[in-house]
Image (cartoon, helix red, strand yellow):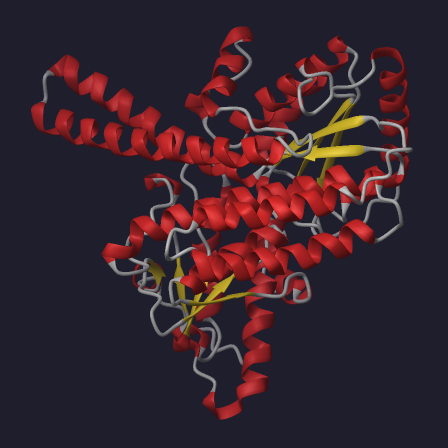
Length: 454
């Protein structure tokens, strides 16, 4: 690929947005490995050629075409798409056509720099010959990541339900791995099992998602959970339970966080990471919350048309959130009858937790809305330590740290910040070893939570 250095800012509106995915290859960045693959298979079940891109192999390209002021996920995803397109051009030669692909890069409103990723990446892509024809498909938290515009209108609702369901199931497979791996009978058993299970569940979603055969998916998931539970060696004593929060990309992208969960496990931890579905629930909850505020304001002023518009949003987002929470509860109920896995909190409960001590406000937004009360709930539930994972210079996670660190010191619960960029910090393992020593001491003094709640 050669750079042509000609950029049209009109491209930011014309080549970033919602585009129909039919007859296109839908390129999905790999954030969470299991979640990305199950999502891709769900789209394939609806006849969309979805593909998960390799990740982190193009990091040098990402660093070359960013200034260093962007947060780390922007650099990684920038490298992922440039590396993929470079390899496709090498593979296809003269038949290479960037218009055949749509690169998926969602966004968020509010102060987080994530809201500018696709704009910045659009400018970079436009500076390359041919890549100015590669469109960026974008969804936004502004409408709760609605899928309208990506597929025919009659399939939008079914695809959204299936996509959300795939996210919840992916969370379960991740939590099954973290529950089993610290207690596996032989090293490597859990990793091999979950990798195979990801492909099994992916095939199941591809076959069942468009027909809404969710019970078949759950039956297969139950079989996997039973098999996974058999990997646990009952002779191994319970280990310190560590809760993890932070920026959604860094805490779920293994290469970006330098496999921090595995490092914690190496020093004796059992880890529970915040889920992806928690973020999806939050975006829907936040839109519902905004709609309620708008309804109250317009009701006071008796502005009929805006009032009815906000009422419609309240109903739509309320129904959406109710569906998400009920579906998530259904999945966790079936799985937790077989093995003790941590269950997500309701987002409304997390907001109540913040209000109790006036720690933070949902009015300020960002993932701090989830991380701060998530840390408090870990503490209340008897976890032996908390880790905050985030990109270096991340504003929401820095706010989380400023609030959480003195709070955890007061409660005498070990707490660790782990910011990441492309460098490898020489003191990282020493910090984790020290943290885990404190977690082991906390376990001796206080015991630990049974994840089943019994």
